Image (cartoon, rainbow, N blue to C red; front, side):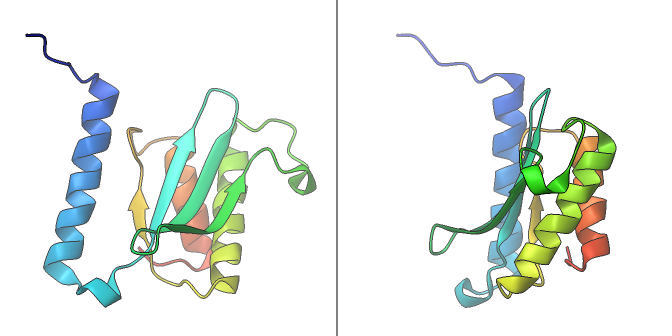
Length: 126
C-alpha cells in the first residue's frame, strides 16, 4: 500500500484554505460569506480573481497578460500593484467590497503582497 505525499506547496495551500474555511464558519453565516480574492503567480506573470465559493462563480479577474495595462514586464512588483488596483476596480463594478485574501501556496511577500496592497488602495477590505 503506497501513500501519496503532498509537496510542501500543496500543504501550504491546503493549510491556507482550511484557515479561510474556519474563519467563514466562525464569523459568518452562509449568506454572509465573503468572496475570495485568489492570487496566483508564475515566474513571468501574476493573476488575481475574485471567486464566490457559494455559487462557484468568478466575479472578477485580472492578470498581467492584459494588453491595455501596457506593462513592460508582468513579473515585477509594480505590475502586481497595478493588478491589485485593477481587480479592486472590477470588484467594485461587480458589487464586491469585502473579500478574503487567499494567497494559496505563496508566501505573503513581494508580488503577492503588492497585489494585496494594491487591492487595499483600490478600496477592497480584507
